[in-house]
Length: 130
Image (tube, rainbow, N blue to C red; front, side):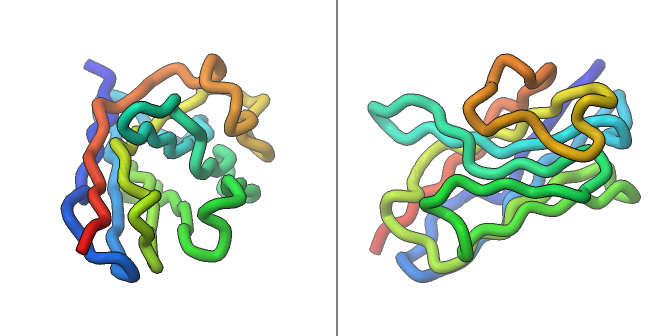
């Protein structure tokens, strides 16, 4: 069974850090671009960060640039999102997603192109609050 399973969410104070993990099972992430999306209460889901299949290119939404870092560990078949300097507005359910194909070897799909992603995890909740 092909699955993406996120972990690492939780409650953190403003200014704190968290590292989200998304592990793939049933398939290898070698040929997949990966992304993190989030959905805050009452808001639409938005793309946060993405990485190309060959890890050559990363993208970030403006609101997280300089604070979040996406990375991919092929030995662990896992993609990570390191989040620092967290703000209350980062509170959301965070989802990882994978897009298959050679089109994404060097550039991941746009963060607004959710339809390009083939597999999705169930999400992990991040709450930033004092």
